[in-house]
Image 1: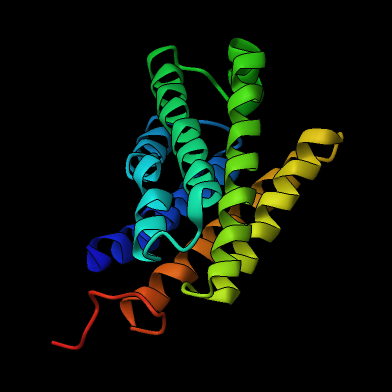
Image 2 (image 1 turned 90 degrees about the vertical axis):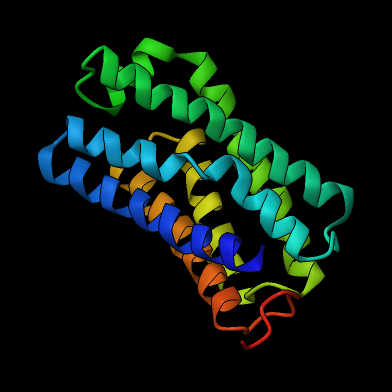
Length: 186
């Protein structure tokens, strides 16, 4: 299981980074970019849950709740990628206008769940502290964007930092640099 979770923690956020670069390079959504987004988001509902399990549940109920909230948010975000594909929505602003407050609620779930998971995972001292710190810094940037009128680039930078954090966590698992069982040298 550790191998699958570690690989997912590297591949899914990496695809999300590629998707964000494609979106910025083209000035909006394209079919290719949205398909990459969908592929990136597909494992996300399970990723933090897998990380929680790898910690032997040292994050306790708060960590589990955070992982579940983050996962539920990404189930919805999967849906938003399909809506954007089906309706040929041009960009993030148009998607937000189409989905409104429901999108915002799920964004808040992602931020709250991610923060809860990240803090409890840091306290558990199993996963990469650098990766978790980056993940939390990205979550904080996403929160700041949600509460203010910062330019869109800050939301993208926050997502990039969050994704780099998950990639670091995944690399730590794959390299055996965590106290996760199931990654003994073979």
